[in-house]
Length: 241
Image (cartoon, rainbow, N blue to C red):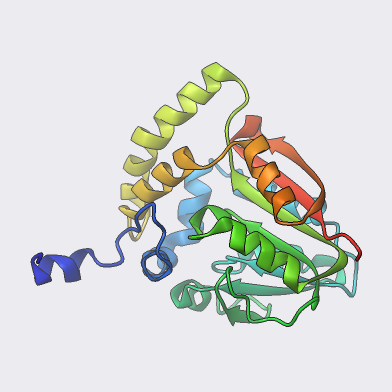
C-alpha cells in the first residue's frame, strides 16, 4: 500500500490514460480556477476562433436547443447561445461549473456517457476538447445520438493530427516538452497538462474518429481541419428513422 499522505497530496492532480471518470473530474476540479486563461495561453489565443468555428459548424437556428457537453466553465456555451439559441452547459466537474457560475447559461452536472436528458430532447450536441477525456468515447457518441432529435447535428471539436509531416513533428515536440513547462507558469494544476499532452498523442487521427462517429450511427460524417490539423471539427447528422 502506498503512503497515504502522498496519495492525498497527489489525488486529483492528473488522470491516467484509462480515464476513470472520478479521476478526470477531480483533475478538472483542480484546474478550474485558471482554466480559461491557461487555455488561451497554451493555444496562442486561437481558442476563441476554434469556438466560433464550432458554433458555425453546428449551424443552430434561433429557438433551437443545443447541449454543450464537457462545457467546463461554459465559455463555449455562451458562444453557442448567440442569436437566440438555447444552449445548455453540461459537465461532470462541479469545480468547472462553479468557476463558470457567472456565465448566463443554464448548467447541469452530467456524464457524457449517461446524460441527464430525455430521448430526442435537443436539436444538436457539441463537445469541444472533451471526447478525448471520456472513458468510453463510443458509448458517449451513442448517448449523444439518444438525446438528439432526428435530423439534429453533432459537432466534435477535438485535438487531432497535423496533416503536414514536418509540422506534426514540431507539434509533438511542443506537446511533450513545451506545453507542460508553460502550464507550470500559468495553470493552477500543471500536472494535469502532462496528461493533456499524453492524451492528445494517444488520440485517433481524423479518419479514425470519423469512422467511430459512423459506427455510432451518425450520418453525413465529415471533418474540417483547423490550424493545420492541430484541431479538427467532426460533424454528423442523426438520421430520420
